[in-house]
Length: 534
Image (cartoon, rainbow, N blue to C red; front, side, top):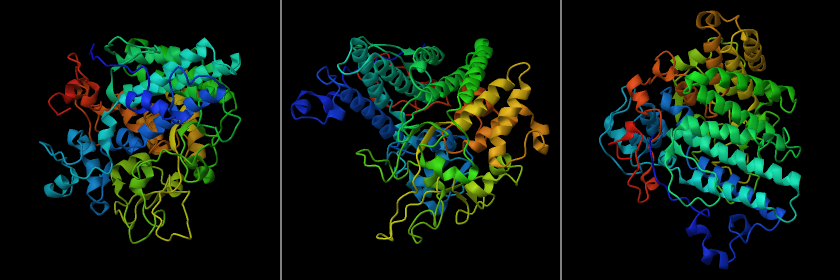
């Protein structure tokens, strides 16, 4: 087991929430100490702060793209997109320079697929608009986890004005935030430090990721029934945790562990299938018609189980990076204004990959989500999946804002396809798997399985894999699907496969920033990144 000592904070951050700040009357949504937990409003403020911190962490860079799409190599940066986009090519080559801080240039391997000259690529290394480096820092997640641990402790002690039913729901919501944070880190870094104590003072070791995920599954199952399937308040639908979100998270964690805990994979698949069935029978969620997709991408729709909600009409002190939305990389005029600044997409998908996703050219998602989908010309190609809600401000013709879209984390289509995948791995469940697959295909206007010629060729399991890649594009799942299913080792599924040796040494993980060390002599990094500068 890889080990690391971390100094776990009793409060979220002494620098932000120390005594001087408190005496200076820090805003209530930033307080986390013993004097703060006095009322239901205090609990709400603390929870809102945790969600805000998750949003802030997620939107420091293009997280869905960097972790879910770019690393598998199917995205080609356009020269016209500027040097910042060229870091995408480095991510696709599993090159640590892609996540180096701005201005840091060291030994590197230029990906063979790169069509620009070396000097141009080197210039990109001084351009850190994407801020991929932020992904190597895990302490913001531990700040959220510590806040959740502390609030759970206070709720268990009892808070004035919070009744028993509310207490249980708030604890369940805290557990969701905690488990989501751990699961996100596991998929990024592998083994992580796990703790749930409110006042953790002793140093802890990095724990095997399968063990961490098992604990998170148990933690989430213990409280998910204390939340409603979905939020009745439409302004909180998908934005605040619910039983639906908790169930989908457990399903995701089961599918991850099935890929690494082989001796128990059948049990993981069984629970995923059962929970998917339970969620679908609840009637709390539905697939919207494809014509209503902009409603889904805007957020708070009946498809949303959990999202990091963002809108230009919502006042918030937390702002996302301009480069944070996945769709930003792939759109230009008329979805970005003004025309003279945005005549090209920053990147395109490879023609080979698009043909793998859409062998059936009558699939209606092609027209709904793309312009010129099989054209690698960045002036004509657009992925407009997240561009349906364009910001038009007649008073500002030079408005350069991104279209309104939320950051989708868990969505109903994902649940249906996880159930399909789990059923396909279980004896006697093939018809159920096909039914689930076809529910997503019918909504997308694609031929049902197995009418497509390629379906017969690739089989059910691969058909489900490619459907997930197509339906969930830009939602941060594809690369993790490649990793957990080991398809990352096979060139027929990815343009940048890993060798078994690289996979076993953790090439699928991200490097961990040195800030995780503290004064820790036991810090052991993921083997692949040793000697890489991280």
